[in-house]
Image (cartoon, rainbow over all chains, first blue to last red; front, side, top):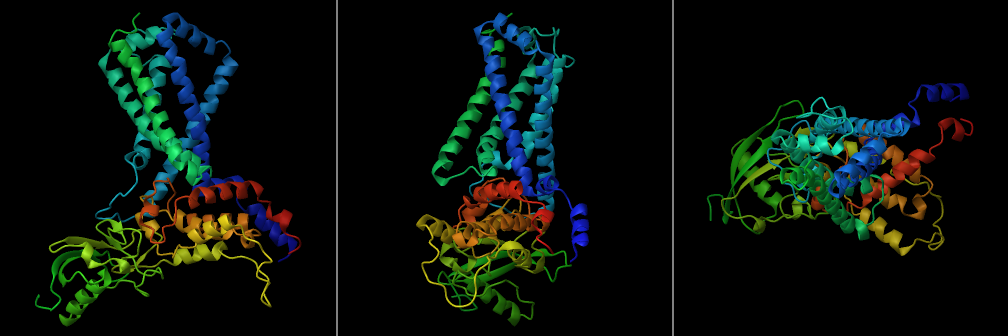
Length: 233
Length: 264
């Protein structure tokens, strides 16, 4: 082959990044990397909201602090939006691909060691995605808020919202889905990134289950605290 | 003893019958008499004798060594590849694990990449093409080399031998809810990639073999572990993160073809 022909082949070939994206392995790596960002955000979001228990003024001050620098706020929002986009698009493409990979299903299929959480990632993922849209419209934009919405009055908005049954039910269902999603997601992101060793696998699984449970329960505690009157305006 | 002289137990089998690749296929119900000393495939041999005697088309299923090492046999019994006992091929499954009156559903491996040829026989050439894409090493030919000229750490040799227990039967694909071939491909990548002899192609191998795996239409890995649970070679799920790490490193290290052409 002459040099010119080879150059022509190279020029028309897909780039390294697109080859990475086209591979099921590359997509899973990107899902793990975006998953780390989203997991870190979920932890930080919950810890931030825990200030609700330290006093209403404290959490409202925290909300104002986050909005102090618009550049910082929008940088964080864009990073999260890109992470959600990559995570969701890769996840949906892989799900479509795996449906095509087995066009005729088994009449019966036994599950030996696959957990419920691992088999329902697409379902819990879709529930979480739908909830994020509702959640932003409810407590950030305010258009889907039950009751009067006051910008940056974080505690007041929580209390008025969670005084209605529907937001509470939606919130708790979504947090249970989040718990299941993280239960498998936090464990499998290590494997997708190649960070795995048989000595640590059991520990990583336990850590993931613990983190998922704490995050789900921690978040569910907010509407429960409002409903029981522990937190009031 | 039953009418056909095999006695012991009577089974009801719902078996996937498909004349050829273009036939849509369907389940057909059969009654067969067996005894606990038979292997599962011998029980199917008995069924086939009955079918031939009746002038019907015998059931097609793969088998070769019938001692659990060749990787030729395999189908799904009641939703479990290689049957309910796990850790061995279906030829090593014996009828003592079943009881009189059992109803069993027999299906072929189901994956787009494994087209059904006939009944329970699927075409697993996709696995061969994955091997061809990179499952080799470059080595000096000629006279026999001195045995200890390449030193292999004990741990590496153990990991390589455990991964090399893969017999390429395809049960991992059949078991995977995503019809992924990651356990198979990762086992091959591991058994070559952890040895010093496999280092020259280590990163091109993982890219070539995994890209072929994707191109064959297998699904992705979500680390559920169904593959590991049915693997007759007891290949551990551990090989998949190892492959992921090499794939990631290989993608980062890969040079443009122009930069490594060295004349053509």
